[in-house]
Image 1 (cartoon, one colour):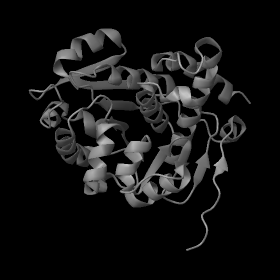
Image 2 (tube, one colour):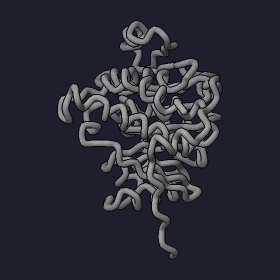
Image 3 (cartoon, helix red, strand yellow):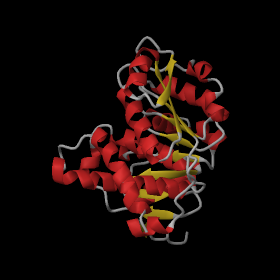
Length: 284
């Protein structure tokens, strides 16, 4: 086997060389938000709006739909059926209707809690999608257990795992992050963002050293999934969109360090930094 190519370092200068994307970003639909974790969809949704989604649609456990609609008045909010434990039910597909097929980007996973219901939901939901699909959180666990779930969206799939989720996707213990990201990208025919490494199934690999331990804070992954969704709605190159989203996420975290330190950072604080980072990146 030939040696793996070294990843290209990610810098703001590199991203400025890439096209800025279409101003008409289209619709991002985010599905998640169980009874116990309704705020995850809020974080992902605002992140998607900050990075380019023209229209935002949020689908969340029914009991939280009204509250979420008030918290994010820019979004259309759909209430989804729940199981007895408060997880989003597999029957949620019936409520989503044409929204899935009409969405420019589908994001599934933030705030989902039941692995079996999530797997069944993906089985019915993914064949209806037409554009890029971003999977996060419990959706990644479902894909790791049932890899065939990704077959309907192979080649337009983005995965945003943490190290534990990466192990499920890879089917092996994660050692080197670059090797793991490349292995997952090849196995699932997907773009992967793992701990600052973005790997594409066509062999392109980037590594971003901007991130820090503060980005492991609760909810940070939900923000990243939304950033990827928003970027993917504006860019034709899914790998570059994912790489750009990862860099924006990391730089936003850097901006917070002087105010919060590494251990006092809150995921929702990243959202206010994103527009400033984007302005800097778009400045020539």
